[in-house]
Every structure is written in structure tokens, then in C-alpha cells.
Length: 195
Image (cartoon, rainbow, N blue to C red; front, side, top):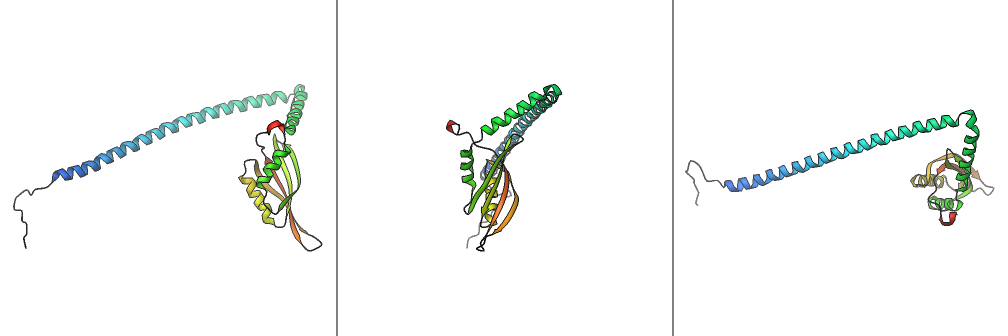
């Protein structure tokens, strides 16, 4: 058995390998740190720019609200009452004229679950938005709940609410559920030809 014994006071060490390994690790750490600093600075600058845009937008919104309040104050004066009433009437008439039953039926078809049918639809206008009052009927309550969930996922129906629910029992003993639903309706782009 041979045993290698080194009797020198300073044994030989391969320092080149040590410096190469640790130098590479140090260079990687420096590059990684520089990358993180760059990303942080860039994120900070972008955030400051976005905050400045948000402040500018809020200032514009405040100006518009002030202008709207002044316009409302002018329209609220007794001598401008006729103009205000005529303007409200014309805006409501234009909005009613823009309502498309075809578009509504297409949108309802997308959200209507199976086993549920529409009994009545009553569109109306509240605060410059279409409001739909629906009466639907199905064999189970879950169908109306599924309709509400589908409406919540849709971009055309906002804030759907179940107003009233009635359990029906027919003479033959079969039951059903009639549900009254109210929702704000945002129609899609108008169809070709204004239908």
C-alpha cells in the first residue's frame, strides 16, 4: 500500500481552479444583481409614469365633473326648464329607438340554460341604461341560478338580481319555478342595417 505524504511547508494547491470557479460564481452574482437593479429601476420609473398619468386623469375627471355640475345648475334654472325636459325626452327617445330586439334575443340565447324558458321581457330605461325585467320559468330553481351565473359572466348583462321566485304546482301534480330577474343590459354594436 502506497501513501502519498507531502512534507513541504506550503503544499501545492490548484488555485487557478479555485479562482475560476469562484470568479465565475461572483461574475454571475454581479450580473444577476445588475439585472435585478435594472428591472427595479425600470419598474420604479414606469410606476411613477403611471401614477402621473393617473393624477392627470383624475384632474381631468374633476374638471369634467365641475363642468357637469355647472351645466346642471344652468339647466336647473326655471327659464331653462323647457330645454332640459325636451333634452331628456329626446335622449330617452333616441335610446329607445336604438334598442334592438334581435340583438337582445341573440344575447339571451348565449346565456340561457337548457330547461328554462322566457315568459316575459320588459325593457326600460333608467339613468341612461337599458334595464331588463325578465320572467323565466323552469322545472328547477337551479336553472334560474344558472341563468344568473351566465349573465354575470356576460359582458352584455350587468348586476343581474333575482327579485322574486314562485313555486308552481299544476293540476297534474308537476311543479315548476317562476323567477323574476332584473338586470342592466348593455347591447353590443348595432347590427348591419340598424336592425
